[in-house]
Length: 344
Image (cartoon, rainbow, N blue to C red; front, side, top):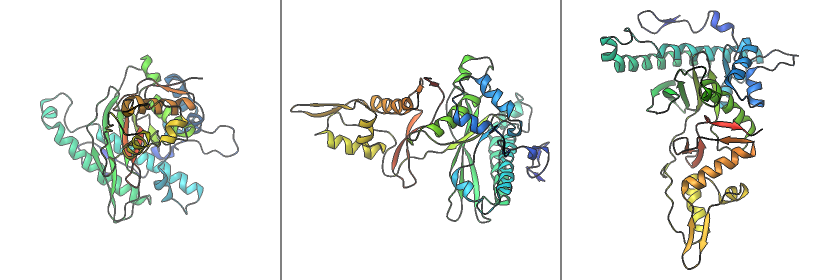
């Protein structure tokens, strides 16, 4: 039993009824494949339909998705059964941690709560970091010399309540950084729930990762609809290059433009041509005049989605950013799937 030191909140991460659940069905010799597989293979158009898929898979307990690749690599050597149990335990570990971040040690709207909110939240973030570190060590994801640290991020958005990054610290860290998005509670009857929010964004993110081979869409790992949060890959700015694309008004020729565009975005001219993206025009005695960066980048993302019969109705500079590869080179990433429709 691990007590995180709050007034009436004790977390039991390694035993109890919560551990009878699985992230998705692992039943053998059955035609039913579980909510994760269903969402990955099919674009589910409405929130009601997504909720029904979770209801069919009672073992999911509202969770769909998978651990990141390098997290899963830590479980090599285990039997399939042992791996399944460990994965479910890790999901329940995060459920307990995220639940702990919500309440505070004073009644909401009280004078004490308003005065101490920031202090109490920072305290709980530190407690959760220690809690996750201990749990991930127990489950073989972290070595005894390494830890994980949770940090709150400043974000804006109609559907985002809180956002955090979880990083591994210590000797030779290898685990993928997690971006954890906590969703705001919405009117459950709102029409926008079919494209935004905890159900739609998780379902459509898993589908996009499964169907789109181009890496322009960020990786969606797992989401817990019971707690209303989702984990994805965390994007950091590229080394030696600004994350803000700044194109020249005129280039000497298209070759100079292509080199500069690739340097800043990681997108090659060949890729733009393959998707039929109009990038500008050559003017005699002047040079190559590119279209605006927004026009080029948004069109490119739209064309990538369109190839998988998807359309994004909410593309803007805050949900299409320049992140970086493992080598620190720039790469264009769509980081918000909210607003995606299927053309089928």
